[in-house]
Image (cartoon, rainbow, N blue to C red; front, side, top):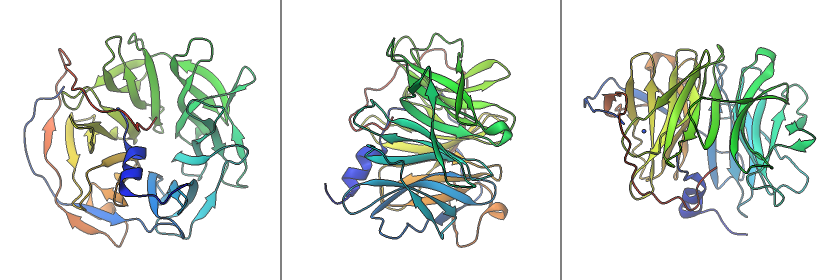
Length: 334
């Protein structure tokens, strides 16, 4: 075991996660609120924030072990672990009731055991299909019937499929109709609109928005690495892309206007990722230096923040071809 360094956290944050025509602009000021780490944390990743300002994420102790935590922004927090033979606990999303889903790495799993943590009693259940625990990432969740989503590796085919669940119970696979070789839903809004990422038959990764049975492919740049991690009721999404040297860069994408806005945090970091976004436009953002809540509107931001320059923005146009960069994927986050 070892102390968590920037390099260590950077490898944990990286993931292979896009075509746009840029119309460069600099818009109104955003607000950035630093997240106070849990006691004993040497590194923190905030994955989600709900409409009540409650956050969920993970923290690393001095031995490099990853634990889950949740609570009001800047505390007090409740820490928890999946338990059993798991080696790490990673909460990925929460709803307005505080219910959390995520996954726990384990030597018996390729990715991890997927779980639902119920807020009222703190009980943790495991997502199952055909008597076997799902192996993948559980991430999107909403209160209505505790509907949630994620992906899992099919033990028979090895293909990574998307799924829908209710109250911690698998219900059905998600078929985008895009001839995908991997489908990874990552978020649900209150209307049931889904966002995530998929890999096409050429091995190129795209974001997607799945609404009323129709899938929309989202490529915010030409890197072929777009990942959408969060979506709110207005279809403001958050996510990230990877550059040619393997560094992730955060953004928001407003599906109503087709506008992509870069999130650029000046904290000396090189790894920046955006995760969940609530209905107030508050985005959970993590870098290899710290974690933040990034607010797209000043008047809807929690206290304790600092105004920052909003990143460049551009209008996304439908792609006719994708020529992905060769990006480094080692240490990739699932």
